[in-house]
Amino acid sequence: MNEGSRKAIIAAFFANLGIAISKFVGFLLTGSAGLAAEAVHSFADTGNQGLLMLGAKRSIKARDEEHPFGHERERYFWAFIVALVLFSMGGLFALYEGIHKFRNPHDTENMSIAIGILIVAILLESYSLRTAVKETAHVKPANQSYWQFIRTAKQPELPTVLLEDVAAETGLFFALAGVLLAHFTHEPRWDAVGSIAIGVLLVVVAFILGAEMKGLLIGETALPETRIALAAALRGHHHVQEVIYLHTEHLGPDALLVAAKAIFDPSLSAADVSRSIDEAEVKMRAAVPSARFIFIEPDIARS
Image (tube, rainbow, N blue to C red):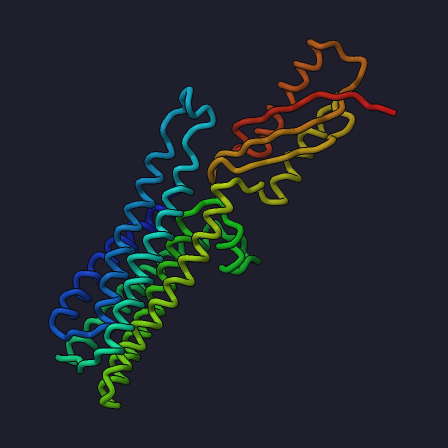
């Protein structure tokens, strides 16, 4: 995990922990359904940052006989678990709480406390989101949108924190709107509507995150520019006449599996072909350092 991802996760962890405690105290004092949904959401987000750190730690374990390609996919697995936690502990609980309070409405007590806690939470969440955006800007191409970054990034931590922070910030405004509407219209069901809106938001974000992590877990190819660089390095070897195919798969954000088939000079001996393959691998790793595992099958031209 790079330093930017680590900073974003740490900032999100402490922000969410402080927010979760304040929201839970606010819920006990006010009985607000929106605050209850947001408290569970923030506790889930706090645990999610821990899961991302766990995945990063487990991914650096050395290769062994049962895992000859390493443990890099641990980062994708734990990010997928984050999506499940966001869906269940965040989205489903918020929906349940909102529907329950909608059917059995009651006025929110200590309105000033609820509003104050939500405003403080918005400020803390803004700090976490700002950190995530700042660290993402260091690795995101300038011409790429944040949505495109989330869809194409091979590292799971920054997209996950970005999605969580955006969902949390939006959910806080939903909760604040629900509390204010319930107070000024004297209709407590608005607070429940805010909780339901938070639940729907979290379920949608969880599905987006889960779909992205599913693709990485199954195995996604490298970005086009990475494949072009690898093919160019292989094709650039003086004994390689043609690259028949080149397939790539991300074993992790920083670990790439490359399988290629190339036509070598037919006049080469077996020893020369073997030596040429080794040289080509060196050139490919120089072009793309993350290409840890390279397998090249030699072939000859056929009429």
